Length: 395
Image 1 (cartoon, rainbow, N blue to C red):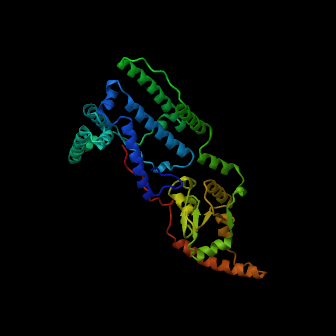
Image 2 (tube, helix red, strand yellow):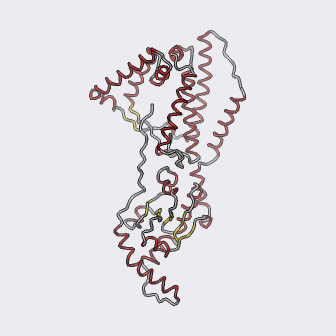
Image 3 (cartoon, rainbow, N blue to C red):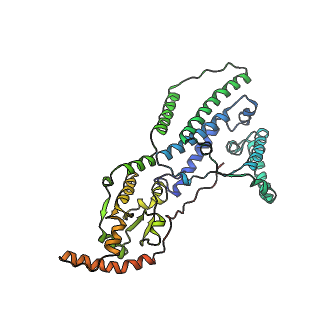
């Protein structure tokens, strides 16, 4: 499964969902006729383009799904694996696979689909594929130079051409529809049939309507991230509903090593330097939209305190977090600038006049002497740690 935000499907449930998706995928392939080698090789002879239609449709749906989920802030694209491009091995491998497709009548995926329903030729095809994999693995030292030649990294068409993702998706979908129309003409000509006119059913109209709505939202509506960042920049800092934690309460929880306290530090690394508070995690605004860092904000029975140099920045970050659905966010009164002035560098020459001031000044004097040592002993530095790795693989 994709890295959804919030983390709706956990790592263990992922395998269960993947099992049912795999079963559904195999059923769709079989229903599309991909268990029959004659239908598959029809692509190369021009009498049946079902393969092109199914895989082009699958690619378009996957592309639209990824872009839509990312647009609405439901997918962490940074954790989505993209196969690196090695141009020469791709060309040679594509040629070998194409020849094997024509000769054998299957590709690796469709051969498994056909073997599942007992096709003997598919079983033999899988055996040949396994033999080829074994030969490549054993002879890898000989093929390594070709395999790694022409490393292009992870290029993406919309980045290389300067197109936006929605515009690229629109153009590719349009190209797919034109391809479907063109191959229908080729099929009719090869079969000696009269070209069929487009038949619009209620289902096709409904699907087209949904596609138009998604395209409209992608072109017109800003992404969730852009919308929240725009609101945070334009709105007054007082609009955040985050609770304000006083300087003394914050200092007391730090001194007491409160296990429920979780400090989210939004200061840039060059600004904070080595002055990180204990139990603090360095965050950027981008981390709020990512899968794993945002897990920290979803923890129960934890007091999350957003800190920055000033309270206005804290409130902007809290407003974005609230817009993403996170609750129980606190901000530090006055920001860390006020904390440094009133706590870490408290003026011990002040004379208290009331009982409350006597207690407050006594506590601040103790905090002024103790906290700097705790901060100096804190070894944490750098951004929030990410342990989730991209799932390597794919066909």
